[in-house]
Structures are given as C-alpha cells and as structure tokens.
Image (cartoon, rainbow, N blue to C red; front, side, top):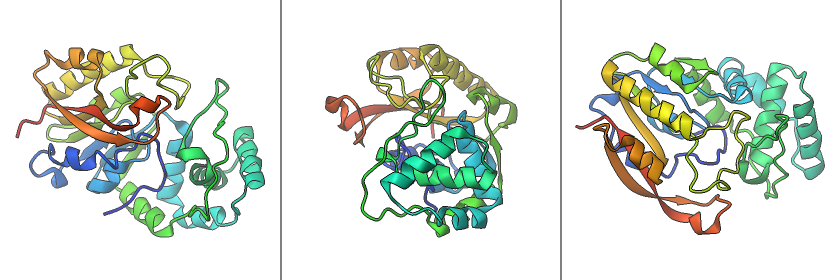
Length: 272
C-alpha cells in the first residue's frame, strides 16, 4: 500500500477502513475521482487505476505536479535543507515572497509541511503561509520511496485546481468519487485551519449535496465524509442516500472537548 507524501490535518488515515466497508463491487477496476484531495490518504490507500484528483489549493496541486513529473529533482532539492528553527523561518519567508521555480517551491512546501506545527497548512488573509515552527526530533522530511510511488500513481491521473463541481464533467457512469470537503464546523470558531482564502460554508455544502444528486443521476458512485452536525443530516435526510455514523479519533481540534473519538458521517449512494 502506498503512503501519503504529506502530513495533512483532517486526513482520513483513521477513517479509511470504515470507508472500505462501503466501496462498490469491483472498485479496483473503476476510475476514481477525488475533488477535495488534500493529503490524499484514501487515494494512497486504494491505489486506484486512473481518474482525476483536484484541490483548490494552488500550491498543493503545483507540488503534486512536481511529484508526478520531477520526483528525483524534488528529493535532491529538499535534502539540501537542514532542520532548524532559523532555517524554517528563512524558507517560510522565501516561500511567501514567491517567484520560485517549480522544484524549489515544491521542496520548500514539503519542508514546511514536515517541520511546521502539526503539519498544518494555514494562510492569512493575504494568502501568506503562517504556520509556526514545529519542534521535532530529527524529522524525516523526504521519503524517497513514497515520493517515487506517488509519482507512479499520479502518472495515471489528471490533476486539477478547480471547484469541486468539475467532477461532473469528467466522471462517467460506474466511476467512484470520494468527497472529503472541509467539514462544516460545530461552531463559528471551530474552523481554524484557514485552508484557503475561499472558505467553505453552508451554501457550499448545499451545492455539494446537489452535486451528489447529479452524480446519482449519472450513475456515478460516491462516498462523502463529513461532520455529524444537524445541517448536514437535514440536508441529506430526504435524498435517499445512506447516512452511516462512525466514531473517529481526532487529535487536532481547537475545541478540547472535540478531541478524541467523535462522531462523523459517511454519506453514499452505494447500497450493495
């Protein structure tokens, strides 16, 4: 099984085996699409045969393009960066200043991901990466085997940086779509990662619900993970989709009471 190249808050490493139980028959032979890619835990877990991946984070998609096209150069470049607080802030400033070549930007992206606090990706209102230095003991920054395997997998996929609705234009009948949107928070203060400047609110989740209805009409299988909150449950109650409740361990949350095992939902049109 392949493993993710990046650390990613909200990743589905702990949820993937629950998702396995819902996969349609013959899923390994189906094209796979993931509109909210992030760290791609499910993608690397499944190692699908082909399809598309997408994320609105432009830097993230540029990083994955380098992984796909220039993995050896990426490994060589990131291995030049020693671990340390001073070096971290120097590279963070360089990253935010822009004007970098593709490989250098990707290498710094990987370095900041593996050495920043909790592996978060967070930007301010000016789209400047502002995660502080993380204190680790000899962190492994580049895993050559993971990068090379990711490069092989990505070579079978189209990479997009678009709205999640792109998938209705590329998915075909019988394909599988995994949807992992930014979760609707339980409170106004819970959504703290500032993943992108665009945000993802209740209106976006309603648009996602409508997309799921379109996928159903197209004969496309989908599985969506989301938070166990009333607006989400209400939005899908009358769709005919299956809503499964699962308990998942979460270590990163601003609200201390929401750490540990908390309920989440898996919504799907797969019945068998």
